[in-house]
Length: 95
Image (cartoon, helix red, strand yellow):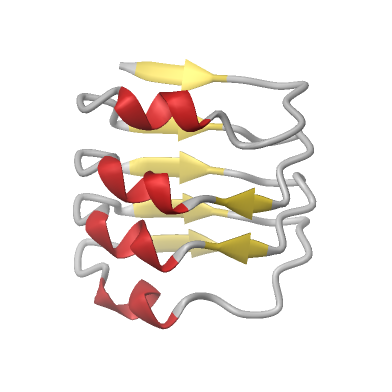
């Protein structure tokens, strides 16, 4: 399953109730924070959140152990959660 959204004012937490989601693109929206519920997407492989104004990523992203591609270019991030280094399958990151 792949979802691509735009014109969002915040991260759509309801997406975290889709256990089979593997590809998520919320780029070009106004999302300042990736909430703790992101950790429920345990099959997520690709996550794009470019140009959203993103300031914070929840530490629960560590539960996304299938994540291999993460893109967050054009945002306001000053740091990544400490748990980010525990994503063992992560091969590509764009900041």
